[in-house]
Length: 72
Image (cartoon, rainbow, N blue to C red):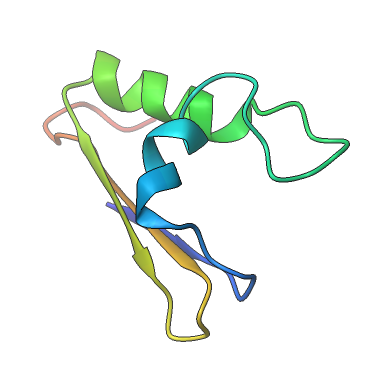
């Protein structure tokens, strides 16, 4: 499990699916690849993700991937 939180304006629940789509970004100079890649890894490995509110009012992203693999 990995959790990442920020203190920005947060992500509206109706925009969560958009945020994981390639090319979508809240930034004018962004490329919209970061969360799209996270979503791809989660799908390929049978994991899950959740998006909620951080304690600072921004977004809290929680990613879970199944265990059982070797670590290097």
